[in-house]
Each structure stands twice: as C-alpha cells, then as structure tokens.
Image (cartoon, rainbow, N blue to C red):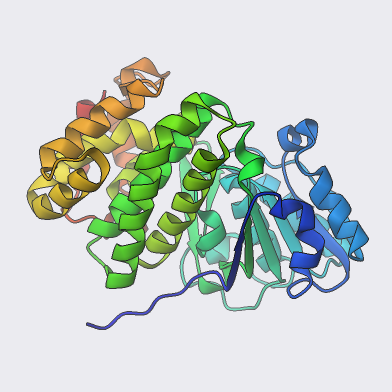
Length: 377
C-alpha cells in the first residue's frame, strides 16, 4: 500500500479565531503589505472588520480586493493578481467562501510567477513558488482551505481547474461565528457540496488511501449530524462548527483522493447557467450515485449506514434524493433555468473534465453523461 498525503500545514479552529487573525498570521505572513481578498457581501455585512483590525494592530497593511464573485472568472482573478503585483505585497489572506479562497490561491502564486493563468490549468503545472497564504473560510462547504486546487470560470461555457502543491495554504483559520449569517439555502447547498467531496474521495478510483478514507468518514459523520440543525437554527454555534470542521476534513480527503463525476458534470451547470456550485452538486448527486452503484455497492452501503443509519446502497441513494428537497433545495434540474435541449450540450462540455472523470469508479462516456443529466432532469 503506497500513498502520499499532503495537507495545510497549520489549522486553528475556535469561536472568535478571526478576531485574532493578526497574531495567528505572524508565523506565516511577513509584516507590511498583504493582499486581503474577500467579496462585497462580506464587506457589507462587516464580517471582515475585526480580522482587518487585528491584522493592522499586528503590523500589517491590508490591501483590499473585494471584487470576488461566485465561480471566479479569469478576468477577475487577473485583476487580483495585478493588484498584488502593483502593491508588491508580501503575502495573501483569503476571507470568504470557496470562490474567494480559490482566487487568493491563484493570486498568491501568479503574483510572483512568470507563468500565465492559462499555463497552469491541469495537474502539477505550477513550477514556481508562491507568496505566503492564510485562508479564513466563511462557509461550511468547499474545504478549499485544505486543498491545492482552484477552479476558474474560463469562459461562458467552460470551467477549468488548477491543481498543484503550490496552492496548498499555509494556515487555515476556522471560526464558526463567521458562518451564522449564511442563508438556509446556502447552508444546505454548501453542506451537501462538502458531503459530495467526502463521498467522492471515499469511492475515487485513483489515489484512494486509508488516511483519506478516515477523514471522509468522519467528515460525513459530522456533516450528516449537523446539516439539518445548521439550516433550521442558523445561530447554533455547535452545528455551524460541525459543518465547518466536516467541510475541512472532506477537503483534506479529496485533496488527496480526488473528486470524480459529480463535480465533472456539475461544472457545465455553473459555467453555462451560473448555478451555485453546491446546488449543482446536490442536484446531480443522486443520479451519479445510481450510475456508480454497480461499481461501489459495498462502499455505498457503508456510507448509507454512517449518513442515514442503514447499511445499504439504497439508503444512501434514497437518502440523498430526499435530503436536498427536505432542506429547501430544488429536487431536479428541470426546476432550474436549465432546459432539456441543453442536456446534450452539457454532456459534451463535461467530457473536457478529464482531470475529474478519470477518478470516477465507473467509466463515463458522453452518452453516459447525457443519461445522468436526463435522470437528474
């Protein structure tokens, strides 16, 4: 049994940790100018203010970039890179959801590399070092604070991933307080997204290993225990903490045992229709589970017991068929702006996601992708 396991070097988890971001970053970030990446919503809610003040008190000069948008488009990422270069920052802080963290990773790398963004798409294409990087997630879903992956919306029809060890953050600061303002819909979608990460890591064809398996199982235990309470009682710190920790553990798992068909088929939904990534995963998961069942029946049975209390693949598939709608999410693709003629177009688009499809426990052809979309429609 040969495997390697990589993860974020240091993690801090506690209520109120973001208010001590300056001292917590002292080991990582050199004093002086740093890029502080976030989005306009977080700025408007005031969620970042204590963190910013803590950084200033600790001797940092945060250069604010608050233009991050969901499914980060390449031009926006390059604006962040340009700001980091022009200000000659010595490090980068990401304060937000997965889109913000993905943007900050690429800004930290490209700010001190001669490579272009186009040159680093794919796996292990980065050849330079990056600036020091601290990540503060505000959602319990992507786990990006514990992965070496960033996803970019390259065009109106295409998403691309960058996966290189240089993108693994130096420090993740997890503060459950930051996620209490998330809407019920966002909490549900990002929570199921984290569960998809763990399920796909546990059943991946390539690089499956005992460390990732253990993390994936614990992530699913935490997420399934807390997701309903986090949606219905948003200020429940225990539930928010369980979701945040579960998300990070799932991120550690899929960073080493990579995701597969759910994510590959979800990308065209985000690129063409701008559906939130978590919602896209939630809509496609039951159909992909049905497709993969014959290849991983025993694994699905074990997950069915952990998540839904019954050791059968049926429990897993039926449980996720109900979970999204129970939490207020649409049940089918037909309940979104997606129309049936686009299913074949998206199936064609999905075939470009070879980085992900190669990991699926069952081979996926374009005809299979179309059948999965139709099942989910």
